[in-house]
Image 1: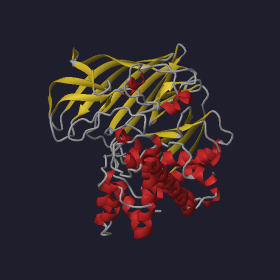
Image 2: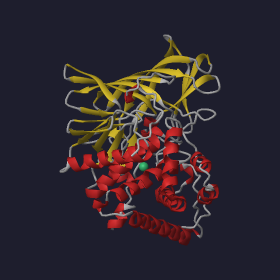
Image 3: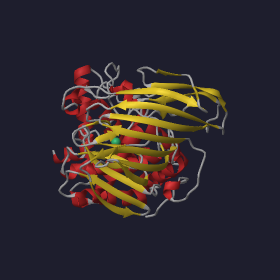
Length: 489
Ligand SMILES: [Zn+2]
């Protein structure tokens, strides 16, 4: 996500070789099926309510057998008695323009082979659906279950919600918890992006009023109309989640970059060609610098959103509340997340800095390569350093100490201000210092290697360290000093 708090560019104003990723997804044209789980979702949207069925084929590509499946229920975080609000108190007035109201997710049934399965809603905040399977599923075996569920959407400007202009549908379905020696249950923290899931295949069919244009992840495989309703089917392979936005106001323009068709959906943009160009030029640059983008579609979607933007596989949400170069910067940041989150994933609850720092440094790299926007590497890094130093000084003055450790989960950050400074700015500065220390050639060689080696997996914080270690650059101490909070900026 781009927490638009006025850093890098907003502060400055106040701030090719294509390396093939080991792609095995049909959406990138190579047509190879693989041993991934499959979501087949059918939803009908009526007013503010989604009625859905979901057939989920679980493929066990873990090392252990599994008797129980756990799914995160992110949409349930919008309910009245939620312990963790997805909206931070400072954003409530913008997020709820019509007053605070609530949504809810209700799982109605879970079955296997036509007979009901036992399930419960648990976790720390009714955030997890726990399903007991009939039999143990061993590695390389699969099982198919069916579920029915509804989501009542809150009238909220958020990743999941309905507002005057758009309907944002991210995190609207039960998604299998990411696996790391067991299923990892994500709590919906208001700070950061509280997600962790593994790559799977998706076929999603959504039926809604026919005047609604649906911008979704992956490719549209069919569209049909019946009695004032339109059904749109999407197919997305090898992706860690599926998201879409619906609006009756959308206009579109498109461009091709390599094997990818970029579509920009907008309703309030006087220069849509300029916005599209930010997506196009950043994708070209990142293709050449980090390695080719493996998906055949990428949708940049203007929508109502409190923060700057939010990334999802092959689709990004961009807030309509930003203008000028700052709007372009958000597009570049979210496009960079297609490399650093969509392709190379990570547990964003535990290690949010991994993808945010690289996305932010990719923004610096972008503006360095497109100087016509008026920024330089030096000016952007100086700006980040200056903001970070102010943060350290303010917190030190208020609390008598400042914790600059990076290996912290979202629940260990006390404010969004702290999280942004550590996960975005400090990490961005860290990468610039690394680049200065080891030189451009080694620096970008390492990022290419990281991208190709960890594509479609979830990387941990020491995987990038290991990449540079293997290049023989003696950088372990460098990373450790930043991670531990000992490095002085
Ligand atoms: Zn981000």
